[in-house]
Every structure is written in C-alpha cells, then in structure tokens.
Image (cartoon, rainbow, N blue to C red):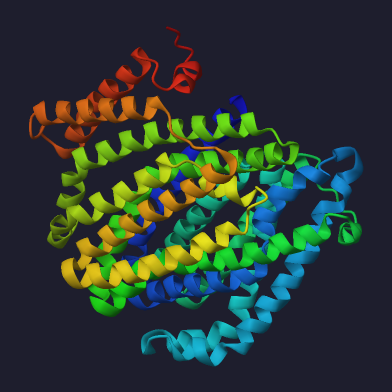
Length: 490
C-alpha cells in the first residue's frame, strides 16, 4: 500500500487545495470582478465544453488504465501506446469539432439572451481551441495514471488550472487585460496544464513518440474497441445522471434554488476528496490485478481502500457538521435554512465511499458492460425520485433523492459484484469507525457553543474532535494503514 499512500495522499491534498481555490474564485472573485455576464459565460462555456469533450476523449481514459498494463514496457516504448492514444484522441477531436458546428444552432438558441452575443462572437473558434487543448491534456493525464504517476497531473488539473483562473481575474482587476482578452485567455487556459504535463512526461523519459498503428492490428484491439464504445456511452450516462438534480431544480424551483444547492453540493464534495485522490492510483492497480487474475489482491485492495477512505470521509463529515455555523455566518441568511441539503448529500457521499471502488472493480473486469446498465438505472432513478421528492420537499427533497439514488444503485452494484466475483468492500473496521464517529460527535455536544472569535472556534473545535477521533482509531488500530503510515504499533 506504500504507493497508494504516497500518491493517494498527495493527490488528495492537491484536490483539497484546488477546491479551496475554486471556491474562492467562484464565490468571491468571479462574480465581483469579472461581472455577472462574463461569469455566466464562463460557467456555461465550461458546461458545453465538457459535453463535447466526451467525444474528444473517445473513451480513451479508462481504456488506457485497463489496457496499458498489456503494453507497458519502457524498453519497447510501450509498443507505441502513446502514439495510439494520440491517434484515437485526434479522431475523437475531429468528431467533437464536427459536432460543435453541427449543433451550433441548438446550442446558441438554448443560451440566455444576456450571453448569446458573447457566444456568437466566439463560438466558432474558442470552443474548438479549448476542447483541443483539454483533449490532449486529458490524454497525458490518463497516460501518467497508467504509468502509476498521477500526482503531477492531479496538481495541474486541480490546482494549476484554478490558479490560472485566479491569475486571470487578478490581471482583469488591475486593468492589465480587458474583458475580451480575459475570455480569450480563459478559454485557452488548459495550455498551462498541457505544457506542464508534456514537460513532466519528457522528464520521466516516457515520451515514446513512436507510431501506434501497430496496436490497431494487435489481437486485443477488437476487445479494446468494444470496451472504448461502452466507455463513451457510460461516460455520457454518468454525465447526464450527475446533472439530473441540478437540471430538475432549475426547471421546478428556479435559478436561486440552484445557487443554494450548488454551494451545498460543493461543500458535500469535500467528504469524497480522499476517495478521489486514492482513485488516481487505485484504478490502475485494479486494472493490473485483473490482467494478472490476482483475485486476492483485488479483494485486499477493495477492502483496505474502502476502510481508509471511509474513516477519513466520516471525520470530514463530522467536522463540517460541527463547524457549518461559521459558513452560514459568512454567507447570505438563506443558506442557514438548508442545512439538511448538505446533510443528505453528505450521507450520499459517505454511502458512495463506504462501498469502495465498485465502479473500478466492474470497469476493469470481464463484466464491464454492466457499468453502462448501472448508469442508465441511475439516471432513471434520479429522474423519478427527484421529480416526486422535489415536489414534496423542495431543495431538501432533491438532496434526499440524490442520496436515495446513490444508496439503491450501490446496493445493486454490490449485489452484482458479489454474485459474480464473491467480492465486497465491507469489514468490521467500518462498524468500529461508525461507533468512534458517534463518540466524537457526542464530544462535540459537550463543548461550549462557541470558543469566541469564529477562527479560534473553528481551530479549537476541529483540533479537539480530530484528536478524539484519530486517537481512538489509532489506539484500537481500527484502520491498520493509518497506524502503519504514522509508524504507530500496538
């Protein structure tokens, strides 16, 4: 687990740092400096670009993680795998650009009047350029994940791009660039990450720029093509199902409710950050073990990562609940009425984490087609549950529907995995973790309502609760990897 500790923890730190920078950008800097029109343009621009980027990716993200182990051999330049990815991504990019022009009337017609002019002026050149830069950036990200070196790519994705946004806002604030130049630079900001990842790949001596055409004649290619098609459809399904709650809130409750819900969802995402960080290195390891047929290693990785991530995620959940009053005090009064939006979304995140990397287990197994089925079921459940629960309970209902969907889909996936592979991520350590979490929250109820100034209260309360929680975990060796990481023995 040493490689997971090194790369997973550092990746998690970068993701957290990126979230903090992104929160400051989105909540304070963008609206107040760039202005509402430009801010709206950048939000909608990113959403449209993400949809077209699914085509540009051409399913090569998870395809790389799954099949790269079959070609990994530095002495042979990995059989031209990097060139193969470049060919596939370029084909995908051409399709994406054709789609950009093919659906231009629908896209431009669906945008609010306030930003239509900005899109008409820039749609035909900024969107293709932005997607091209993002496409090849993702190529190098997935390639470095296949090399089991994800930290630098996570840094550029989570921190580098957001810092670039901060820099651009600062340049706009000081008058060094105008709004037109800001939008232009914002649209091509992926160039920073692309250059950085390219330099790092060369530094690793992994820039094997050899032809990848030979892979098209490889015995695995038919299987790779089939897997890639399912990956594209699965990614599209995941994208749609992940936006159902926002889209239905928009239609049923209005944009003001979307703003509140989006902020609460952003806070709830903090719970999942350790899970996301470890995934960068765990996913290629699952692919490697499936390739070798090492079921015991898959079982061990499945359980240990689930316990590790759940133990950290639960601490974050408790910490947010104990300190959320400080966030409410700094925001508009309306946010304080929607604590349960965060609570239900947080429960959903914990359920997702406690079920481990079930998606990776399926994606890299011979039963990978089930992933697409699960995405379709997720979308259907999300639409039905959100419709009825938003009508009944408003924003709280949307959060409850999202959490319920996560619970039901994970039950389905775990049942499928256990039936076919006799694998599950659960352990007695999870029950002890929940018990220790309950004790920690009880300790919070015994503390004073406030230790004075909010920063002092935030620090002292977080320190006391973390010391209690981690102290009990370490004392009873509930999470062995935590003791090993800190070199604490029984």
